[in-house]
Length: 316
Ligand code: 6CS
Ligand code: FE
Image 1 (cartoon, rainbow, N blue to C red):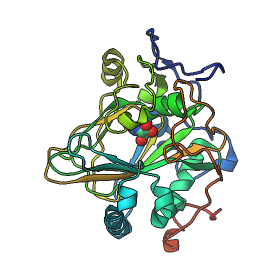
Image 2 (cartoon, rainbow, N blue to C red):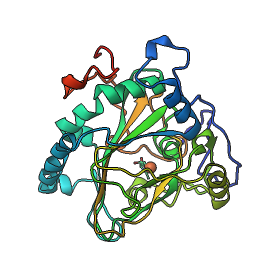
Image 3 (cartoon, rainbow, N blue to C red):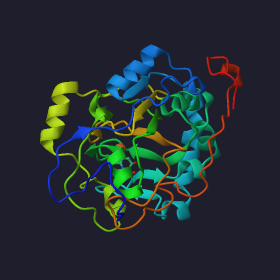
Image 4 (cartoon, protein in one colour):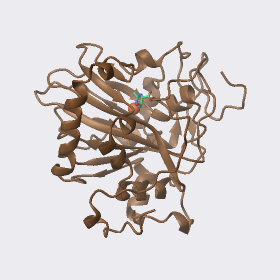
């Protein structure tokens, strides 16, 4: 627990109503140094909605290597029995593998793709590093959902992330349709912080990564924001990319289709927003959930230099 003034109090015993976020959504406004590939239309859409969707961002052959590597990982007994691998609460199948950017060289390179890194630096207005990475798997006919939540609420409460200056990139490894439990988002919800009721249990992450019970906004706040902004569930082929702001409310349903839904997630945090002590938890979470050591600004790496001319500018 920390005694420093908490700008985003949550995990409370007494209700507090939602309030406006304290940080800008796009952090690089009027800073020429952080210009990037997003034009004004995209920047204003991100400010309005709290996410950007790029259908078919990568071609299928860019996605293929990840599947091969995931199959090898599934045969790695020591990895599969580690706490970085979370089982599905209903079936025991793999639900998430955390720390993918340390486990996989291909994945590590992907986090530094110039087209993504260029956009992320532009949105965060600084150098960035990976706060967390994971693969979320939802096998056919099962694959539990996730309740509504703001990732920032968890990262602030349990990882000590000071402010809203992080963005998640989610790469669809499989087609995401309306049938296989796609991510749902509430456009505009990123502009309000919703304090959540209920104190953080000890070692909460061992349960919350299976099913999030604590850090779920109340239905009244959810209903009000959904009334204002609606709900959107971006759909598209494998290779599509979603960038969503750390405080945008999102959830997903169970996968009742015969088709799997696998997404890679990697979370970029600003190097000016590194983690302190948890604001609303008794102890820190493990390093594979929240990077604390070795904060080095990501450098660009381009697996497909022939594409580099697409408005990325010099690699750095
Ligand atoms: O606790 C976390 O960091 C994770 N929990 C959820 C439900 N989404 C974000 C993140 O992976
Ligand atoms: Fe989440």
